[in-house]
Image (cartoon, rainbow, N blue to C red; front, side, top):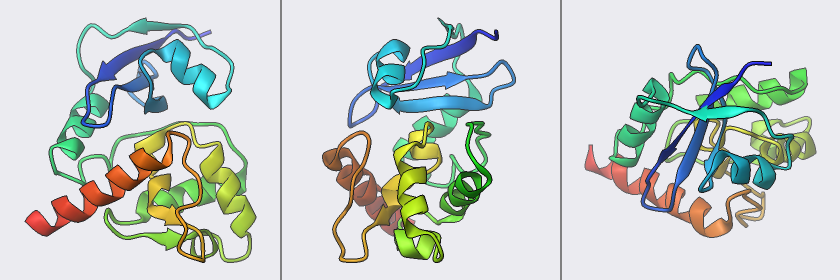
Length: 164
C-alpha cells in the first residue's frame, strides 16, 4: 500500500490538511489539525501517511487561493473513489466558477439527491468546491466542515472576485 504524503496549511478558517499521492494528486483534503483527524472526520479508513518535507504544488495553489487567486486551485489534480455519477458531479463542481453558486438540482438536474450525496462524500474539500452548492430554497444545505466555513469560503470568493 502506498504511503501518502501529508501537509498542513494554515488558513484564515483554521488548519487545512492536504493528503496526496506521490505523483501530487490530492487524495484527501479538509479542515483538520492532522491527517488522522481528517480521515476520522470524513469517516473513511485511515491510510498510512508521512509528513511532506517540502510543500507540494497543491499546497502552493491552496495558499494562492486563500490569498485571493481563486483560479489557482482549478488545475490541481485530485483522485478520489466514486461512481460514474459521483465523478460527473465532482467534475461539474470543478467547472463551476469561483463566486458563482448553484443548486443541487442545477448540479445534476435528473439526480439532485445524488448531487447532495456526492457533496457529502467528497474527500477533497475546496478542490472539488461543494461550498458553491445550496438548496433550491436558498438554504445553504450542509457542509462537512460546518456552515461557518462554508459561509466564509463563499464570502471569500465574492470578495476576492470584486478585487480583480
